[in-house]
Image (cartoon, rainbow, N blue to C red; front, top):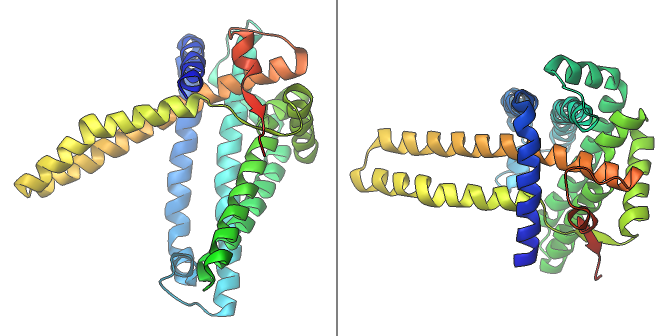
Length: 295
């Protein structure tokens, strides 16, 4: 565990050093974050109105037609979010590639790169949305089951689908941006690069998310929790509001930086898998990005 965290910390430090050269690139994950928030607000009402959210939470039993409508709305919700997130990642990834090539990227460069791959971005977003809906429906079916074994199996199956899709598509955006492939070809190419470089049965071996997860936890422990305790002790609505606001800002800021650093890391992994080139990062760190599955 310590070795995994040390590796993740090294990834974070190097990615951070690269980001320092182009701080304006944080605008891309910020755009993604704002887009996800707005889309969630827009879709919250129709999803609740269809009864689908209540059904997923186990608080209601919507009719068949309402349930189908809910699934359709859920698909478009996932689609909208995936388009925004993938577009932002493509813009950021394109700019990072420019930095790796020794150029000085601007925000306009990132947008231009993302715009040139818009069809592939939308198609990949549709694939993402489909996988997301299938995973959600499997989990929902498990919750509705009276069979404990069925619930466990459904939960495990949904988790396997999510994990497998996340691994196979890990390098999709770098492939899409660098090689100009369509969505399906990018997924295939991403999977091929991972298999050729790390093997056919692989699992993640820690990453930047591990470090930022710990940072988020420590931030809550040191800043958020004392504020919540103080609000409870004084019975102050203002302090409670302040505590919630501080936590939201902290999580947003941590996610913002973590997302940018993760995109930098993926570009480095793509270079390593595609060209066997090691830039900025140590080769051992890139080679240990994935490990053989014990399953």
